[in-house]
Image 1 (cartoon, rainbow, N blue to C red):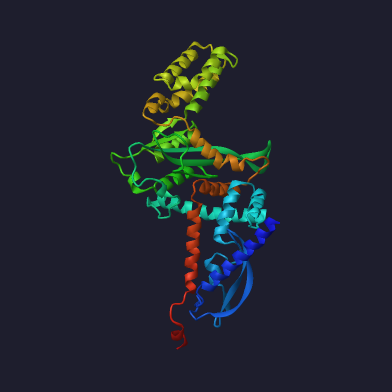
Image 2 (cartoon, rainbow, N blue to C red):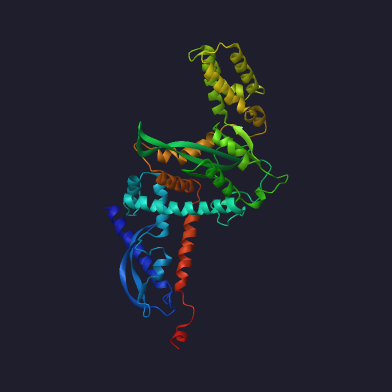
Length: 438
């Protein structure tokens, strides 16, 4: 009974508020084609869904007596043209729900908030907002890559960052990839495709927790595309963060050992200190130990369990490499080929494993907080039980979810609102009515 009363009262309040908005709007418009004053041509009651619920309002129709065309200027400004019944604020809320949960569940949650929307409409609106976000992101990337200019379309709320960096500030950059199940059937069943994510986070030497001052991107991207997008958005940071001076922040690129990452990290972010995630390094030390002495050997177990502690010692990585090299030379390893593979991995990243020095300087050596954000971006939404995705739909969903996790979706909606406002300016009266009559 209470829920029914609230639903009815909400509709009455929203309808009254909408009528006030329509009544206070401009009523004098010109035809955008011929410039003749438009004539009021009646009203019709229309249902609209706002971020607070559903309501009804009188939609004013205007007609040009010369062009014989009908216009709805107020609806154009509010994004309600072309038969759309959801306001931009409602679409923002629906898109946020679509990025957080499955469409059917999002529909039920929105209905409890007084917003009637079906699961198919949640999907449609989520894609629409995702396309807006992706187009902005691609415009920024293309502008940065072609001529090196910074497009004045901020995609993130840089006001959360200090105007100027402090000596203790640490900017951590990381990228990663993951697998998503496709709806295509291959020789071995359902196929999987790769999605990639990137994150830039601001922290300091005393705080290694996951901070608020950061943003992430994601999508079905090629490695070069991902790095170009991440770099173009980093260059939108306040200018003080890019000026070389004594207050320049420490920049760290922290990731696992994937070859596609490190082949591009130095090129796109040359100022960064490159660090191999300590936990990934420890995993490979454990694999090398099992290849050297066998999976059930006590010494291999001891190596695997104490790898992290050993790696952060002053001469730890060098001692590990020296011991593994000796085992390879003596030729007594249980799996010589696997041992060589793991040794080459550790040797290739030896300059990124200076963990003792890095810890003394207050720099992060583990990507736990970074990987947590990346998993929230991809795995938590795209890899739920029974989910299958097309590449196009997964790409749009990751763009939308990245904007929501970064707290930046509001910027995209505000830009779209400004676009609609500018679109409605073509109806604004340019000369007084009496002048046109003459």
